Length: 210
Image 1 (cartoon, rainbow, N blue to C red):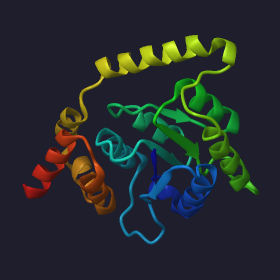
Image 2: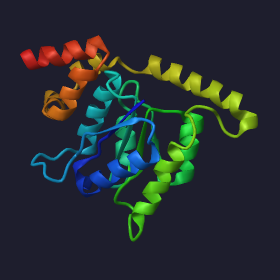
Image 3: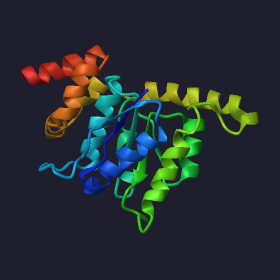
Image 4: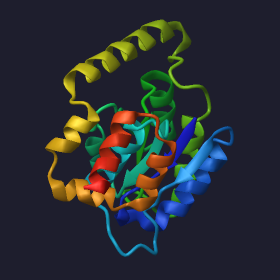
């Protein structure tokens, strides 16, 4: 599994910590840090970053995203508007553990400003440790695992029916939002080099060539 790190520009000071703690919590998988970084001149809102997340996941360049914004709520809501993205809001280790076991989505959003006071990095560390503690989608508690996994499969099937494919959504979005997403070269280059969804790859190449 390839795990991507990317959060809104409002919390660039937490980027390196988020990256390091994710590596510590999930030593088995490859962790890629896409920013936003402290030395960047351009700022990205949670809405703009959610489009980047949609592209990374829809292209199959990464398998999972750890993200966040000041409250974590806005990023979670924006991500869940993206086709194929199921993002959980995980302000506590308990939420992260249950999301991983029961909901088995492909992104989490953590609050990086709200209630982040003294020793805030400890809560973030425990959230990530609980998320990656066990395999995703195994259900919880054990006696209800079969029902939980069945419900998750139903939810995924509903999501496929209720959303446009990613390319269709990109073509309907405001061009300014789309162009801002394509300006983030580290994300775009990673998708072009590692993505497996040919529709997404063709769409990006066409926009660049156009």
